[in-house]
Amino acid sequence: MKLIGVTGGIGSGKTTVCDILRSLGCAVFNADLEAKRLQETDADVIAGIKNLFGDGIYQSGVPDRKKIASIVFSDSKKLDALNRLIHPKVFALFEAAKAQAAASGKPALVKEAAILFESGGARQVDETIAVIADKAVRVKRLLERGLSEAEAEQRIAAQLSNDDLIKRADYVICNNGTLDDLKRDTAKIFHQLFEPLLKKS
View (cartoon, rainbow, N blue to C red):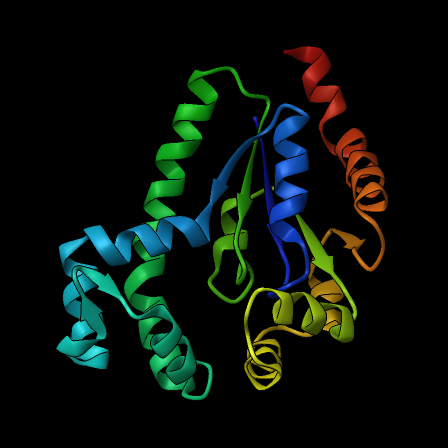
């Protein structure tokens, strides 16, 4: 079973790429969603977050993610501490997902992670795909999600640049165009990576 990492900055379209790959037969593990789930269900993670940001960061068992984001995207030490708290547990969950995908006969498991390279998560996969888009395109998408322009700029600045992603990734998808363009480009990489495995399965 092939293990593929898909990454990209906020607003790049990596989740859409993973949705396309899922429709083409791949299992998908969303590291970012699992990290959010841990923040609400894992006692060690909850205690660690309260230690970092104060007890008041939780309301009715749910962390104020917007407040956390506003803090960590301007405080690299707290961002690193938060990542050290969560990522080892996400890595363990990915190993479990890998076993499950293999047992179900899936030819490939895709790991979606916003900070695949920064977290060390790329070491868990065979090959990597970076989804990139121009900054103006990403800002527009983030404004449509309800972020302010300043928030969008801050989050983009805190993540790897397109140039860094291009240097590190095995494959790159540029998502400045239409959904049809994205489907075509994703399918092209899918055929390069997965079709030989699918034929064997």
